[in-house]
Amino acid sequence: MGEVVNTSNQILLFAMFALSLNLLMGYAGQASLAHAAFGAVGGYTAAVLGVNHGWGFVPAVLVAIVVTGLVGALVSVPALRLPEQYLILLTIAVAFIVSSLTQSISQLGGQYGLQSPGAITIFGHDFITPEQILPLFIAIGVVVFVLCWRMGESAFGRVLRSLREDDAATRALGKNTVRFKVVVFGATSAIAGLAGALFVYYYQQVSPGQWTVQVAISMIAMVVLGGIGNLIGSVIGAIVIVSSTPILEKWVDLGASKATFARLMIYGVALILLMMFRPEGMLKERHSRHELRGIRTEPAGRIAIAAASDGDGDEATVDAATPAPAYSGRSVSIAPAEVAQVAATAGVRQPSPGVTRGSPDVTAVRPSGAIALEVRGMRKHFGGIKAVNGVDLDLPEHEVTALIGPNGAGKSTLFGLFTGFIAKDAGTVELHGRSVDRLSPDAVARRGMVRSFQDVRLFTRLTVLENVLVGVPHQAGESLLNLFVRPLAVRRSDRETRDEALRHLETVGMLDKAGVMAADLAHGEQKLVAIARVLATGADLLLLDEPTSGIDPAWVDRIADTIRRLPELGKTVCIVEHNLAFLERLQVPCYFLEAGAVRRKGSLRDLMADDELRHAYFGV
Image (cartoon, rainbow, N blue to C red):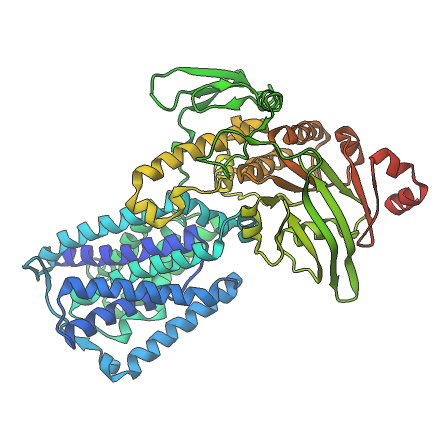
């Protein structure tokens, strides 16, 4: 019985490590071999306070949590922009640095570590035997699981998963990925520090040999075995790996040395088989389904939207082929185009979704002919190649403008320059009269200019609805402080965000695909979801890069209809496009670019009537 209790306590300790590591590695995509080192930081901090300064259990553990969280946040800073392979090397270096420090600093006990930090005492009650400690560890383990679950299955966790999928695309939606990475590194390190401190108090000693890279690999194995992105899987992984030691040593009776060898062989074979036949692990990644409550697709291709606020079961249905009815959260109401017409008649403009949350329902229309984006003297050279060479252009508000020209003319490069993804050599960019020069891509997006990508770059391991939800700004649940201090405000924000995302999906006619994984969509459907995602940001100016590239002709008309309606929703749109039939359908003014410079502006017919421009475009 004593062996079972001791093994259970070890499982609970390593489950805490695995849960926090899964949040970092499975949700945020930040691979780390330093998690055992963070446990060492927490363990040594608690031990030093207990052994050398006589601190009690509770204050020593609390300080260990804070110190380890700060160390984790500091470690994340140089890792922020590193590719994954270099991040792994950095965390290995951190692990070796921590190991070297623990062995070389005399106050930490050197090679032998520190002994007897003190009893586990809470409110005057001592927890001494494994049987007494087990209920305490169960309680702390449940708290850690709830904390990790709350972070992972929230707006905060959704952003982590999006930056795991595509950091640049997440930044393009206005998310400060640097902040999210620092916060998740700090939070998961703090949990590892808690587990490390508990480990030291449980065994009444701390030494460098307890926190080796091999231990860190075991933690990773728990995450991979149980399921990356699944917290329940992390607990299962900890159970399997920790319990394998006593099973092989005692039940199979291999002895300590043979059991160690057998365990490593079993781990290796199991991981190889998982990578071959089930790379997602024992349990697949969870996807929150509560956002889909109240929505179902009926057999005849009709979408049912149930009342979400009072639970009275009332619902309305719309034909999936009907162009974009507006989603109200309770029933289908007036279409966006009709809303825009009514607003225009009244002399007002619909606010940009998301940006004006909490503000009046309508705002004054900007004067007719106002300029949304003004670009002057834009230049960018890559070595001897003049990708953009002195471009001047204006994008009128609430209109669609196209950039056309042969391959290599600098069209997509301009989008990168406008949004801060590419550093310009010269020139200015003003959005609604305000400079956005030197702003990061996420800051530009928050100012109101958002781009899509030619290769779509949806978050393929997220659902369609989750993709659009990521784009919605000002979500209360993206702040850890709000998650744990203002749960009612977070819940209200989640409902508003969900309704807003669903409205944008209806705008592009993709509501019936809300629960589908983005990877399972047809390419044309992915293009429409990409438009819904940039709409969700609430940006006034949308830069759409090749919205019809690589799609079946059947989808071109649908995308054209969607883009044509965007100015009615108060949007200014600029598109880069090679499909001239698509542009002819839109009937929009075009800038013709060649060799990084604007040759002429006009209608597509006028531009293609020019023999010189037509030759530059087609080469004939």
